[in-house]
Image (cartoon, rainbow, N blue to C red; front, side, top):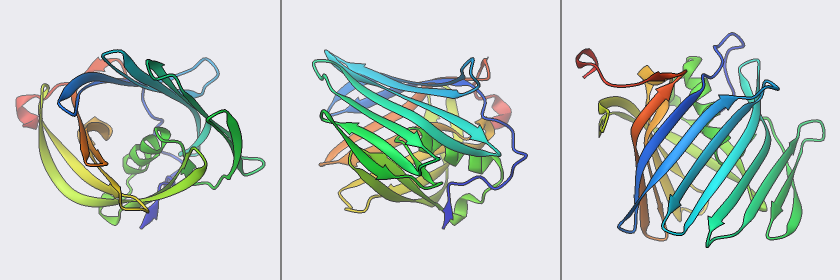
Length: 230
């Protein structure tokens, strides 16, 4: 089992992207937007947001990329509309610590080289795969969330063709379990598109949440399936 630490210092940097997903949960549908861009300071800004009826959320992650690895700096989650809440993570690599804000209080967590926030961990997975990591070996990751560091395994399932609004997309699939076995997730990544996420499913408390890509832009270019790729 490999960690989500990059294997080469010469890998290309992550490219900016913007993805739109059609998402369903409890019979309701909503649009999910995920984007990555470079800031004027040279950091990456990752944004993940969705809205359904009068509620929604937006989460942002700021991170750096050094020698092919990601260093998380700050993560913020905000509920919008009827759901008003905020969570925040501040990463301090010099002190090997994380300040975590949840329900009006700050908590201290330990920081290791393989600790990420909820959204930046996928970017490290993508980066490791771009650099040539063998997906069949699986991956291990630690995610700072609220008052805990949660440890997950990403197990390689196989290759699958996913039907989308953009056409049938060849993907590789990973399954993620949790320490308490109460939740599970699956993600499908497209090797031809820098391992962008094509589909994800998440089951929690018996509820299935599924999201499938509907629009995709990588480095400013619209992505679609050509007949040769099918």
